[in-house]
Image 1 (cartoon, rainbow, N blue to C red):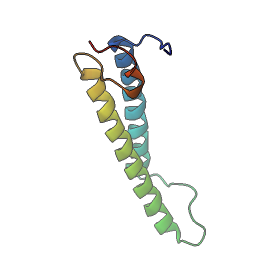
Image 2 (cartoon, helix red, strand yellow):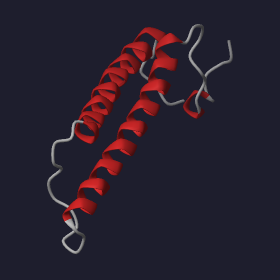
Image 3 (cartoon, rainbow, N blue to C red):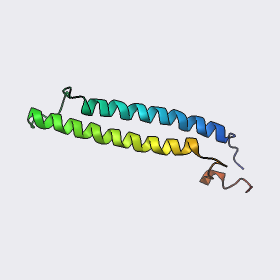
Image 4 (cartoon, rainbow, N blue to C red):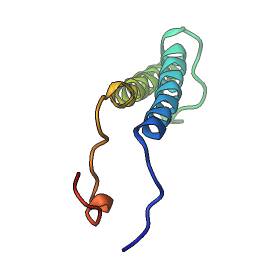
Length: 96
């Protein structure tokens, strides 16, 4: 039988809370870049400057959406009550 480190619901919630803070921070920064009106540097050399600006804003907008979607999943785990979900690695442990 393989040994597993003990994982409690408290540790899972702490990790989920840290993930929540990280994802919200990244989402806010992405949307700040996308919506503040400051020029976005870089881009594709064969596109006009205005198109590069729009492309950069679209990419930052969708990356912010992805971060907020992950933050929502982390928030769900922070607020989850009861026993943590079983995983495939728990199959050798006795059922409660």
